[in-house]
Length: 305
Image (cartoon, rainbow, N blue to C red; front, side):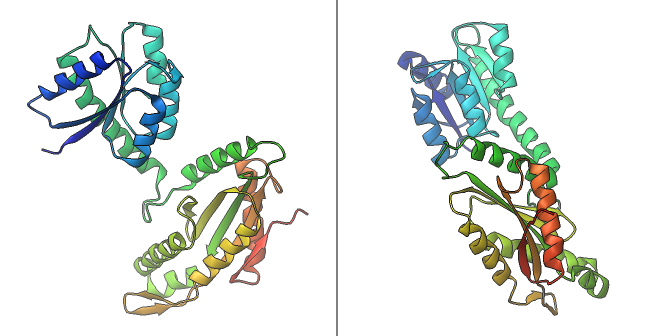
């Protein structure tokens, strides 16, 4: 039986201990429980350790009410969250669920079996939600973010950059690098689609090794990939990244019994220079990419007509 890690965020030591004792009596599950009394500490723990579910009180010393759910759901969107509170309030319960909580339990009323049941259901519901989310936002071949998820991440990157302090350019630049494999159709036509798929997987792997871990890499469809560089304070990073990606394609690809030479053409658009919306940045990057394809194995910035 796999051990489940539970994080309890509760500022009342007696209530926290009561939950710990309750979980210890569950003979059907093996729980490892950790307790903290502040949201900031909980967020630090979640960023460095794995937990299966969080039990959280809405009255914490460093945050007010539902703000705790909002912050936790933003930082860890796929983590099951169960609210434990002293107050039965249907309106608050509805808001908590809308913000990402899986359940809303009143401590005295829902003690014992209800909490254990809520833990099981919350973990299973989140697992199913994550599977559906994965299927709808990931490219089936490469498992990279698909167009839908790329646009969502680009939109959030632009929003964050737009909130950067005035006069401080740190983190205020976002770049879109739209990449197309040169002569990929020839590979499909001569070696077949299975070989072409293997080449796409190999190209995706080289892209991953050529950018920062924090950058988003996605497949837009066909032989088009995208890289989103965010939180940039210096535009020179864009040139460094584009050149690194191109160098990553210099070595031939070994696909089955074939040696395939493949280059790439990259179009670049930049927020806020070229546009302030995700769709327009993608369109600008596409125009720049077609300009790069006239020469191949290079990158070009978007130039407004």
